[in-house]
Image 1 (tube, rainbow, N blue to C red):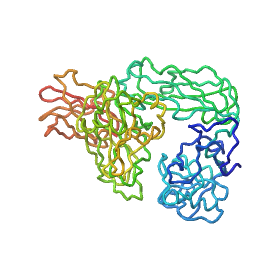
Image 2 (image 1 turned 90 degrees about the horizontal axis):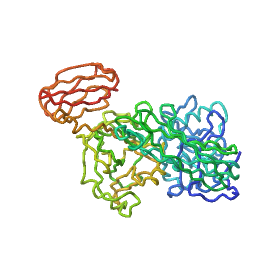
Image 3 (image 1 turned 180 degrees about the horizontal axis):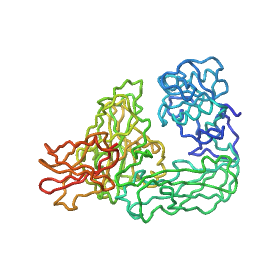
Image 4 (image 1 turned 30 degrees about the vertical axis):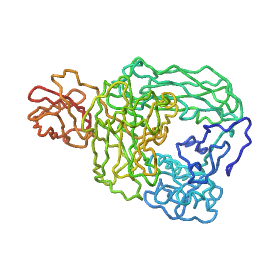
Length: 591
């Protein structure tokens, strides 16, 4: 086995700005391949770990479980304990091995230092959630000289299950120049759909909504490559709707190849799950094929808008861990997503889906925690982020003067987090074409982590379109500027999805009236909020068109309770008719 951060002699390989840093299982074949991870980067100053951006800096070795007597809670994966590593282990207990431990109570730096002192050549931290986060070094990070990476809970469980029945080996680090034939693509160097949740109201055809299909292939190996081709395929619910390939080209050692394919601009956008897959091939068989494919999903529906990866069942933002500012002096923060579209006036914004997480060591009581959801018009004048008129410090002056809607959401549970919740705005409002909007979430307790999704890296999109994606606002006495247009990074998206329906204002205006139903989705009864008073009739219809309930209601101070406990889970249409003939309709989701 290769060990201890080799410095390879590279033949013609330069120090690329985007080095190929991976965490990959090399055996057994049943779980082999690239894993999503974060790593302890020495650039931030909290760690003295190796710099993976230097080609040839890596570790490849056998995995071993840490056994230091600190199993803590939820420590069992299968029949094997994944311990914390908060206590020192015997000398040479993990000599020449990659130590596997889990996140729970003590600092990451402490865990890594203890494993290092016991002979480990690297550390894999298994997160307690099915995502990965940045790791702070803490008090001991400056004494850690071995690599430290984090995997999510599911990947960690798969590793440990394989360790129960045999030997597991992994490669962690920079593979530039390690394999003779090695070419591939980096997440963040290919373009994706502008949105992961595309509202069909503003995407009726390719003229309404399209996106670039382009990117870069790199030669990470020591051999020149020939006949390199990139194919891009888009499927909808499994059926191919786009299939284009680049012209075969040579790819010298240490070089890169740009490719540009036709835009994805279909004649129509039927609702469903779309998958964009990039695949690169060449004459030579790739010695490391795990980076020959990149895949991205986006959904077309009539009610959602955003950038986060969506849960494949609930179609709400992917639930996982979260982020909060790294400063110790901040007092509050707000995560936002930006939206601008030439057909935005077809939509009305109703509310925000989001999720959050807490750190057990912060001892935060979740019940009653307040979250504020707010929508703003971002009216500062600039063409795009490349415009000299745009500055990170001065181009957010209009935001707080242009609040369009807001509301407070109080979390009802005590122990559950990392799950999506929905907060409706206090008023439904129309969007306008080509105006910038910010949809934001802020916790009242600044130690709460707001949900993030790092499944997709929008760096190439950011470069291509030069429009903000995820601005972040942080109140910090030590900072001169509260806004950061890039948020926590182009590869870290806030788990924020806007609920937006078709704009019905101006359609049969004499018979229409605005309102809302909350909570929506709901586990039980709901409240109708409407600009009306007195008697009304409500009929509830399921998606098949069947009437499931009809009743009279009395609207008092613009509110009326509506019972849904006797209805099965599903989507329903509420048809509300007032005594004067005015009517409105709402879509309500019963969990």
